Length: 220
Figure (cartoon, rainbow, N blue to C red):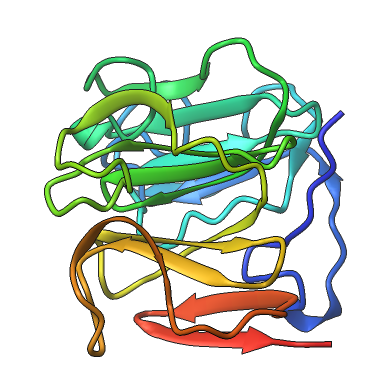
């Protein structure tokens, strides 16, 4: 069973704890992002999503309100929504209005969709990305889009993927040594890169969140 490390807005979020149970959804649904089997917008009631009781409060919908990618407590990865640029990782760009499991692996740790690109970490510490790659945000060393999960290098020391809000063409992740890395469009003086590159030289961070393109990190 996968053990989730971080909450929706970072591990230190308001002292909250990770819970496992039902998921309830509502309101905006123009791409089927509620997962209720249709794309009828403006769901004015809150409805239980299916019958699963293994959802956790560790997913980060963030800037990608048209897509959902969620790791459940068994370590399986589920997705649904618009699927622009293959961001759902299902090998195509077909819209999904109900949850679909991504492959059969049950060793996913956490996953975040950032507009049209997705990053995820497995329990073995490997980093995986897929979706739009127009500015190298997938960190694969090129600008080729991918509609299925692709492993980034062979490193096994990735710990946490971060969600950014204002800039939709970069991905950010933290390693176990507390170093923070990005790939894609440079912001705030960073260069545009197509491979994951450390932001600064500082390590030892135990948690971090992105607020738009503003980074906040903590040490213990």
